[in-house]
Length: 40
Image 1 (cartoon, rainbow, N blue to C red):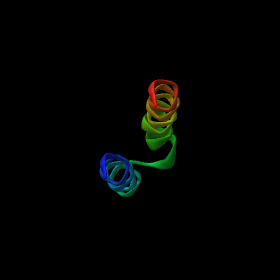
Image 2: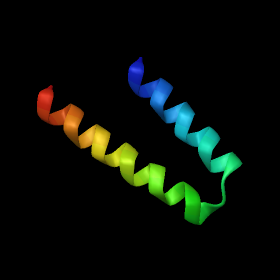
Image 3: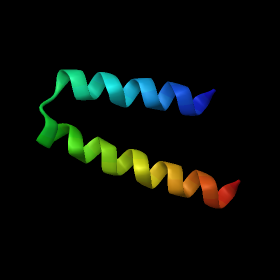
């Protein structure tokens, strides 16, 4: 459920910012997912 929220959040960022700017939160999103997988 939390994953879906994060996913939609970053999709909105893609719509708001240009691709180059949105690339930064994408890296952050990947880092969050990797951290979540380690704790799971």
